[in-house]
Amino acid sequence: MKRFMRYIIQQLKMKKHNPNLIIYFILFCFIVISCIKDPDEIGLNLLEHQQLDVEFDTTVQIISYSKREDSVRTDEISLNLLGSYFDPVFGKNTASIYTQLRLSVNSPDFEEDPILDSIVLTLAYYGYYGDTTTPQTIKVYEIIESLYIDSTYYSNQSIPNNGIEIASYNFTPTPSDSVMVDTVKYAPHLRINLDPEFGNKILNASEDELSNNENFIEFIKGIYITAEPVNTTGEGAVLYFNLISSLSEVVIYYNDSAEYQLVINENSARFNNYEHYNYEDATIEFKNQVINEDTTLGKDKIYLQAMGGVKAKIKFPEILDLVSTGDIVINDAKLIIPVIETENEYDPPSDLVLLKINEEGKYEFLIDQFEGGDYFGGSYNSSKKEYLFRISRYVQDLLKGNPDYGLNLSISGSSVKANSLVLYGTNSNISMKLKIIYTKID
Image 1 (cartoon, one colour):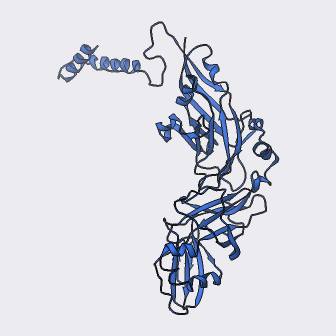
Image 2 (cartoon, rainbow, N blue to C red):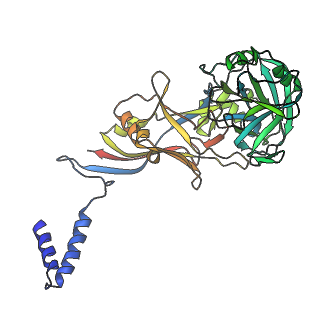
Image 3 (cartoon, rainbow, N blue to C red):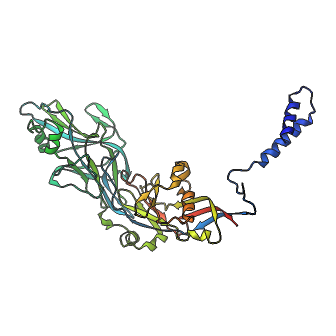
């Protein structure tokens, strides 16, 4: 065949040649191309006397159910969440912030007997989740225990405060609107006037207390920023803030024209607390599955919630039935997760996370994830209303006898997002399913 190919090429290079050679050459190319197999086709490199049988659209039974998340780590996260919303399924939820304030300049000179004009807390917006047309009330307190930058904090932790409000601010969020201060326009941010007594406490602090940040954070240990819970179903929002933005600070205005900034920066210990009120206002179906731990209800619906809320466990109890009559090779295994659509302001999260549970109950990456995000999946497909994960290598390992401790499904970025999600269960008309294409070796 190679000699024939060389001959054809040589003849075509000559000025005089048989015109039929062009036709022969085209036919030859067609034959060669038709012999090239698609890499997805089955049957290459067969062992002698083996025959491959391909099965398409094989669906494996799934057991899945939702359970409460203990907590998520929230110290020094990229965004801090604040606000409250009342989800029709999950009930009331509130996000609160604990943060240190730091001196922008050591030993500030406030002059003798400074007169406070005002003190303002500003927080730079970075998005939201929910209905921002609902008015909210933000309260601010001074905390009485220290925060530490090298400590780990979780979403279910809290720090005591002195019980005295230094702000109670009612407003309707406008996270996309710029803000005019005097005659200057600034990027969207929230402005909260704090109690003058708090400002005077700082202006009248001793030289030692203002000498450096080590002393200052012992004097003012930090603030607690929270929201009153929204009590109407379908209303409210959780607002996202960038606390290390230059727009997030406490500004002290004094002596008519002077000002001084207390900053929140990368050295500021801070964390989020998330409150779900033990899901007292959630639906009965939700409470029976998640609170009362009736795992059989996962056949109807699966629930997921960020902010240290709810996760789901997935197992494939009958997976070994695939090898009951002989070995197989997994060509493709897709975990398809359809979403139940809702008519409210709570959009599905952009991505889910799927992790393997090991024998100690801890989470590990699936081997398929190392193939890259485009292969592994996990992003929301808005046209199909579903998420999809490709877990072919994980399934193959199960068939080799590796123990199945299950998979953990949760919302990506659970520490910095407020999304919730309801999925079709494992026995619904539109169900969560594992679809497998495999090669059977007889």
